[in-house]
Structure formats: C-alpha cells, structure tokens
Amino acid sequence: MELWSAALLGLVQGITEFLPISSTGHLILARDIFGISTENGLAYDAVLQLATVLAIIVYFYQDIIKLLQSIIDTRMVHERRLVVGIIIGTVPALIAGYFLESYMEALFRDSRLVAGTLIVGAALFVIAEYGARTLNSLQTISYARLFIIGCFQALALVPGMSRSGMSIVGGMFVGLSRADAARYSFLLAVPILVGTGLKKMFDLESSGALTTLAEPLMIGSVVAFVSGLLAIHVLLGFVRAYPLTVFAVYRVLLAVAILFFIV
Image (cartoon, rainbow, N blue to C red; front, side, top):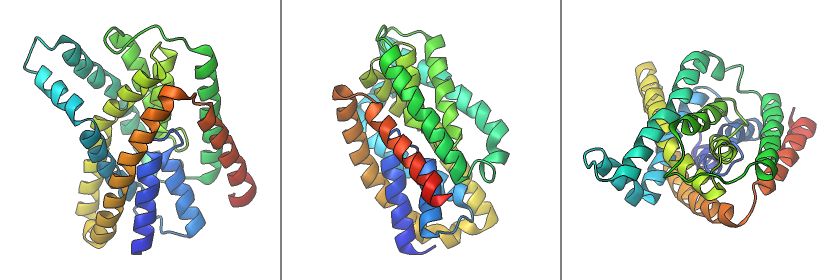
C-alpha cells in the first residue's frame, strides 16, 4: 500500500468513525474511488480503529479514569452503574460479530450495500429526531435500555449503518438526549473497537502481513488519531445544538451519488 493511500484511509477512518455517516462504508468507497488495494482490507481498517479508540481515551480521559476508579470504589455509584451499562451494551455486538465475521470481508463490503444502508440509517435518524422523547439520563436509565442501545450498535457491523450513528439513534429511542446518547456512544465504542482491532492485528501478524503493512499502518494510525480527536469535538458540539437530520441529508445524497456514479 502506498503511503498516500495509508494517510487517506487514516483521515477517512478518523473523521467518519465518530460522525454518524459510517466509517466502514466510507473506507470501502475510498478504496473503490481511488483504486486502493482491498487485500486484508477489513483487518487493516480494524487496526486503524485502535487509533480512533486512543482518540476517545485521550478526549474522555477524566471520565474513563472515574469509571476505572469506580470498579473498586463502591461510593462512586453512578460511575459504577455506567461501567456495568457499557459491559451490557457491548454484548450484542460481540455476539453478532462472532456469527457474522465470515460474511463481513466479502458479502458486506459492497458499494451497493453501502448505498442502501446509508438510506436506511438516514430514515432512522429522521424517525429518532421527530419521534423520540427525552425521558431518561445516563444516571437513571435502566440496564435493559442500555442493552437495546447495544443492539443498535451491533447494526453497525453492516457497512453504511455507522456505529456512532446507530448507538446515538438507539439512545434517543430509549429516551436519552442527543448529548447523553453521543457521550454513551463514545464510551460504548471502547471495548468493541479495542477487541476488534487487537484481534485483527494478531490475524495480520499470524499471516505475515503485519510486517508488510507496518509503515502504512503507522502513518494511517497517526492521521486517524488526530482527525478522530477533531471529529469527536465537532460532533459533541454539533449534537448539543443541531438535529441529526443534517447527517440524514448527507447520507441520502451520498447514497444517490454511489448508485449513479460508482455502482
């Protein structure tokens, strides 16, 4: 892989992992448009996710320290409850990933599928904005509702759905505000992205491909980390003031462009 390609994929990963427009979908499209090799593509993308996880950890380091402290400090009731909620919310994606992994490299990496799921995701954004009501906070929401958010996150295994987008929408459907749903979405991302990234890194190592991809991965990861930090900051500020319908419009326009100009 050429170094410019690595930097481009890192930029796409960093921005789109957190904006609700699908990182996997955009990485597939970037490869199609620029003719970038798809060999070990899924594994390469998953390893790039480790850089975006680091961006989450750096941005939310105070929150994460409190969550870790709450594991041994029983007085930190709300933080400990959120830790349990993150564990519960991670379960659906783990189960779905286990059963769907064999399909993800081939069947799920198709531009036509991305176009369709971009539209489906856009529809869910609109429904959430106009149909959901804020009834809960992260301090009071039930574990059952956090599990439902985890089920929405699992939808992101299909390219084009967007992990952040689906978990934010899921949060809004169960009564969280956009801001609370976005915060939980970022924290919920850490376990699943770390697990997926490390597994794929070991897969690349065992196949001997990690040595070949070492330099592109390093460049792509640095770019993904920096752009990811910026994307987190932008999205958190955006959702406090504006609805998700802006991203819904973008997703529909992108889907139309894919169907007319790429497929």
